[in-house]
Image 1: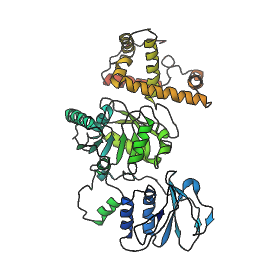
Image 2 (image 1 turned 45 degrees about the vertical axis):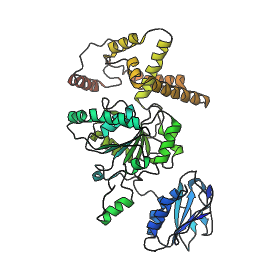
Image 3 (image 1 turned 90 degrees about the vertical axis):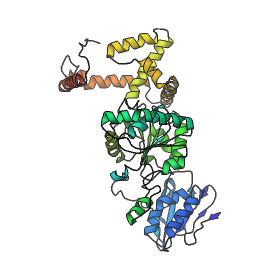
Image 4 (image 1 turned 60 degrees about the vertical axis):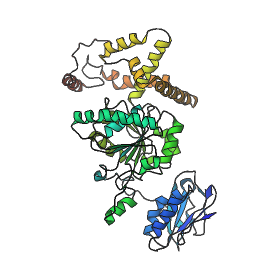
Length: 459
C-alpha cells in the first residue's frame, strides 16, 4: 500500500484493483499539493483523480468517490461502502458526496456541450501536434503552419525530422505566397513530453489570476494532435493511449489513417470522445479532408474543426453522424479501383502503361491508378488492401453483409430512388444530379480551365 504524501488528503493505492477515497480538507494550498502528489506518482490510478479534482476543490469536507462506469454502486450506499476500482478498465465516474449523507447513484444531467473548444486567441500560440514526420506527416504540418499558426512535429527518428524540416523549409514559403498568408513557427522534437507541453505558457511569467486559471485548466500545449503513423492498429492505439494523458483536456485526437476507423481505436482509449478520423489525401496538392466520428466523438468538435480547416485552405467533408464507413468516402471508391487494377495486372490482361493510358483518356485525368499507387507507396497500398479484405472476411464470418450483398443493396437503392422515378441522368433531365445542378457544375468546369469535351452516351 502506498499512502498519499499529503496529510490532509488521504488516499490509498493497492495493487491492480483499487479502492480509492479522497478526503479534501479546506486548507490553503491543499489542491496544489494534491496536484503535485499526483504529478510525481507513477501509479496509473493517480490519473483517475485528475478529472474529479476540480469538483473536490469546490466542495471542501466532502468525499470524492471513484467508481468504474460498469461498476456503479447500488441506488443507496452508506459512506462506509467501498468499491473496487480498475486502473485498466473503463473510465471512472466520480461522485462527490456529503460526508453525512448516503451516496446516491444519480447520473449527472446533461447541461450543454460536453466539450469546450479552445479560445480563438489561444490558437495562435497553441500548436497543432503532428505525430510522425513521414511523407504525409510533413505535408499535413506544412498546411497547418500556413496561416501564422504554430506546429510541432514529433518523431522518434532524428533522420525523419531532418527530412521533414528540409521539406517544410523548401515548400512552406511558396504555399503561403499562393494563399496570401504568412508561415507559422514549426518546431521538431523526438521528446514526447516536450511535444505535448509546448505551447502558450511555456516559459512565460504569470501576471494575472486569469492566466493562472488558464494554465490550471490545461490551456497550454497542443490544441490538436494528428496521428500520421503507419497503418497499424496496435501502433496507433499504443501511441494515442500514451499521449491522451499528456495533452490538455480539450485537445482533439485525430487519426489520419487511410483504412482504420477510429471506432476500432476507441475501446483502447480512456477518452474516445475526443477522437475522430481526419483523412487527408496528399496535401497541399489535395485540399479535401474527410472527417468521421469514432462513434463516441463529441458533436461540438466537428463544426469547430471544420472552421479551423477552412482557415488553412482545406475543404472538410463530414460523414453523417451515426454512420461508420470503412474507407470513409473516397477510399471506398478508390479501393475498388485499386483491387481491379491489381487483378488486371496479376492476370496479365494489361501492363501498367496500358491501364493508365485508358484511364487518362476516359476521365481526362492527369494520372492513372498505377502511377497513383506508385506515388503513395506499394507497401502502404498492400497494408490498406489487406485490412479491407480482412474486415470483409470478419463481416462475412459474423453473418454481416458481404461485398455481394452490398452490391445488391446499392442496385436496389438505385432502382427505387432513380430508375422507378424515371430519373435516368442527362437523357431525362435529372439523375444523381438534378439538371440545374449539372448546369452549375459545367460552369464550374469552365471556370477551372477544364477542356470542354463531348461525352459519349451509354458509357
